[in-house]
Each structure stands twice: as C-alpha cells, then as structure tokens.
Amino acid sequence: MSEHLDTSLPLEYQSEQSRLNIFGFWIFLGAEIALFATLFATYFVLSGSTAGGPDQLDLFKIKDVMTETILLLVSSFTCGLAIFSMRNNNKKGLLLWFIITLLLGAGFIYFELHEFIDYVHEGATIQTSGFLSGFFVLLGTHGLHVSMGILWGILLIIQLVKRGLTPVTSRKFFIISLYWHFLDVVWIFIFTFVYLGGLIQ
Image (tube, rainbow, N blue to C red; front, side, top):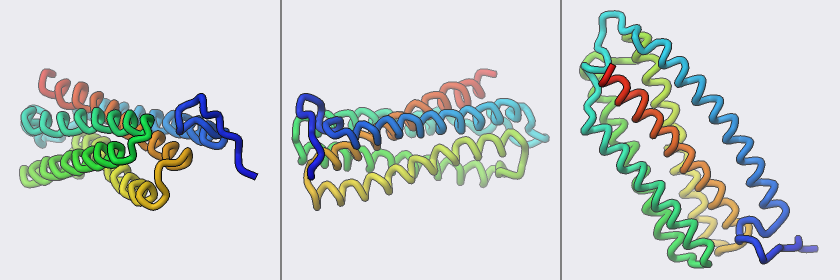
C-alpha cells in the first residue's frame, strides 16, 4: 500500500517518512555544530602557540582566501536556485544549478589544497606548532565535509537521472542542500574569526 502524500506541502515534505528524515537530519546537524564548536574552541586555545614557527600574519593571504570564500558563497546561492527549481518541478533546472554548485565546491577544494601546499612549502605543517595543528584540523575537517558533500551530490544526480523528480529524490536533494548551507555558514565563521581575526590580532 502506497504512503499517503500531502500534496499541499512542498514535494520534499509530502510523505511522513520524508518529514521524519528531514527532522532527523536537523538533529544530525546539531551534532555537527557541536563538532565544529569543539574544533573552533581548540583552535582558539592553540592559536597563540606558534613554537617559534610562522604565525597568522606570516601565512594568511586574504586575496587567496577571498577566492575560496566567493566560490563557496556562490555555491550556496546556486544550491538555493537548485531547490527553487525542484519546487517548481523543473528537473533540468535542478540538475543544472546543482551541477554548478558541485563544480564551485570542487573549485573551493582545489584552492584550499593549493593553500595548504603553499603553507607546507613555507615550513608550516601540522607538526610545526599548536597553532598549525588546530588550524589544519579545523580547516581539514571542513574541507573533508565539502568533499563528502560533492561525492554525495554526484550520487544524488545519478539517482535523479534514473528515477526522476519524486518525493524521495526531492527529499534527498533538500537534505543535501541543508548540509551544503551549513558548511557555508561554518566557512563564514572560519573566514571571519580565523583568517580576518588572525590578520588583525
């Protein structure tokens, strides 16, 4: 027997199972907030412990970080356009904007890896100091989350192409959009308090 759908709601909320899954994902994001809060706290405790190695003023180049920031902010906007298309039953629009979102995310990862490689060439590694340990763990965890989001998104695109726009596929895209926007918010905190805060200390 098929599940009753409430067609007065957006596609991703029409089934009871979808509503439960979305609620469950909000709980998961709560745990992610706790994880990143711990990593931020650890970084700030260690941020002054340079052990004679390079500090924030020696390493951070705001121009490079701005490139990463713009890519991720724009990806959050295109992700919103993808969900807007989904709610208008526009499968092609959903695919287009979501593919652009993932490409922007991949660009972010490329520039972040380039940044890390530059730091290592300057003698700044995760073993150099407490500051760099906290920095690399915080940003590496965020970058890993973005990378997993890209892989997750690719799998969802394959499902959408095979199954079409249904309450199930729409729920999955809505959930990954929550995840993507969450990562964007985390990056805003990183950009503001780690990079900008480090340059004006």
